[in-house]
Length: 211
Image (cartoon, rainbow, N blue to C red; front, side, top):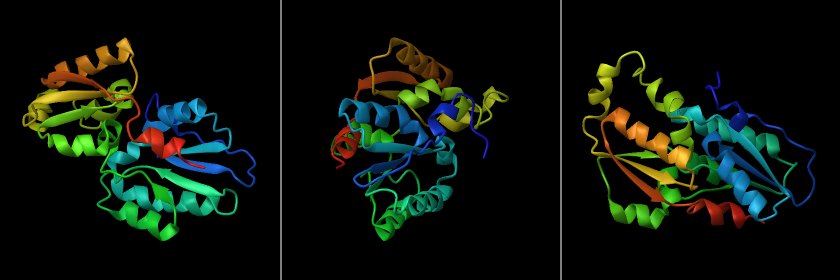
């Protein structure tokens, strides 16, 4: 599968020789920066990261079998394997796969939920909202505009987004450039803009608590 422009650094895999006590996190490429930041902040030098392409979210049926292949390939080389995905549109199939393989994964329906905190997100009950994270603000054209054909047919915008009322940017970092990018995305979609500073949400303890 071709890697979208700007996403290559987040999906390449480089695995060092392993030993007892080492942890492998198999993550969505959209979470690579965040997982690395959490790892480094906790001095988790025993943790390695392997990322699958973030564009798989356009084909969620492909995620469970690719996760299974990655977990099986890591058997015997890592003491712990953890899957840094939520359900991500797999309809519970990823949870079933991880349970069958005996590996943990992040709780929640998607990254928007666990970044805000699953309990907080569920309590909001918000509909008619289009969500962005740092990654999607950075890769908006590659993951929204071009896959939907809006670069070629901007007249389709209201067909796709006419039922949305606002764009909410869940910010993992305080980066003015990303906030501006998210604001531009809202303007392009014709939606009201809102920013919420979430940090890493539930991802922080999920990764930081691995031992």
